[in-house]
Length: 279
Image 1 (cartoon, one colour):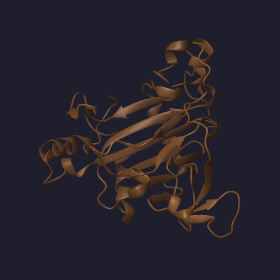
Image 2 (image 1 turned 135 degrees about the vertical axis):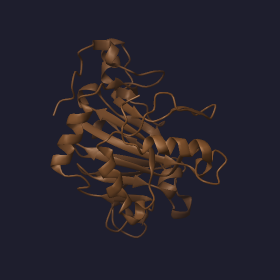
Image 3 (image 1 turned 90 degrees about the vertical axis):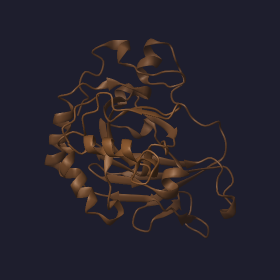
Image 4 (image 1 turned 30 degrees about the horizontal axis):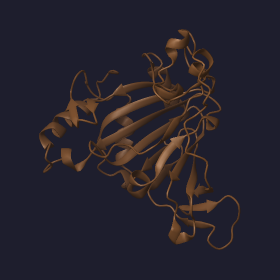
């Protein structure tokens, strides 16, 4: 499936800034670096096994070739084909805004300045209506009990734009313990990385753990996978159009008894009306 209006406005479709890159700016702006990566060094490659919750070495199965990898919850076929079609159809009725590294986005959430730690309600009017039944479904799963998202970000990836997202940790000042993403239209790989390695396991240098994300699955990151391991989607792992919706809950600071509980309550009241439009 093609992303709508991939190149209809040419160079202006590129939202890259600074060191970020995509195929559009590489072609029209003369930038040649294909993707921001760590400097060359030894990297150990592992695959995540969802059944055993182990990271298994790609190069062998002997002693020390795997280790526990907690903090990933994978729910295959979280949505049906019909629901996927309905969700994508609804998203494509709205504007996709250019974003970094060849992505396009739709935001449902407050206006946030993470550097200054300031939050404004701005034009935030709730999460989209079709997300209500998905959130209710999430809350039935013990790993997602009590999950109340206050922000939803839809991202559109396409190989013709060289879409990717660099290795990063999500904010933990405003956003809470669990990051929940629904993966749509195609499968991909979520690459988890730890720059400092695991010396206690004899792994010196970087570690990459590839988490396969099937089409229509839900993946949640929490614990060490949320706060210690960075995550990325590499350009080469986008073979077809991919759309994902990531849901974020509030941190303890914005929950009852937290320092900004009043603001948190306002944000939740707005988010859970499920009457939102992209901001």
